[in-house]
Amino acid sequence: MNKTTELHSLKQKNVLHSLNKTTELHSLNKNTELHLLNSNTELHSLNQNTELHSLNQNNELHSLNLTTETTEHHTLNKTTELNSLNQPTELYSLNQITKLHSLKEITELHSLKEITELHSLNETTELHSLNQNTELHSLNKTTELHSLNKNTKLHSLNQNNELHSLNQNNELHSLNLTTELHSMNQNNELHSLNFTTELNSLNSNTDRHSLNQNTELHSLNKTTKLHSLNQITELHSMNKTT
Image 1 (cartoon, one colour):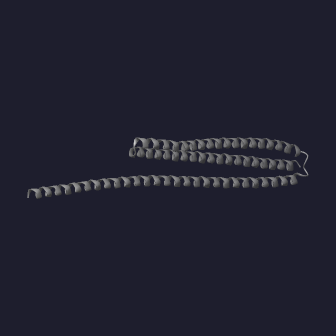
Image 2 (cartoon, helix red, strand yellow; image 1 turned 90 degrees about the horizontal axis):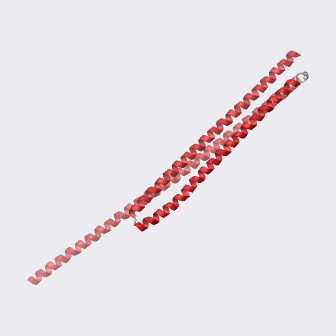
């Protein structure tokens, strides 16, 4: 009977050791997923800051071209409009930084709650182990049935852990897809803005070229009229002389 009790105690310790290992592995996976989420969040913030910086540079370059091409009064109006355009951009950037800061605080709070729950689970496991060792001295007849129930509960716990991990992987995959789609939309918007800027510059060059052609044609017409007038004057003078 003592050997059976020792064997059962050894099995119980193995089961508890396996449960602790599963708990530590689950905690490690949680920390890894949180670290990956923070890395993706920081990378998304860096990309947004880079795109906003590029947009501000394009706005400044566009403002410089407008200042060169227009009069002082027109330049003042354009500078005012560009300043008004930059203010919503800066406000959008501030809102993005505020949201990211709030997301990091929520992530840290979630991590703290997970650590607290794991600590509570470990204390419960240790207390349960102490109670099991005490009960083993008097429960010789129900040892096999109790062991079977324990294995069933452990199997159910493992299944719940695997399902929880699968759900988290699905949520993380969905978050990555949303991030990639958001980045692609921003790239499309930036490409459209660059194309509009190039088209505006091309139209300005075309207008300037047309103005130069009109000026040259007007000057040629004046020269032609002056030459014709000189010929008429010379002919008139020759007629008088004759």
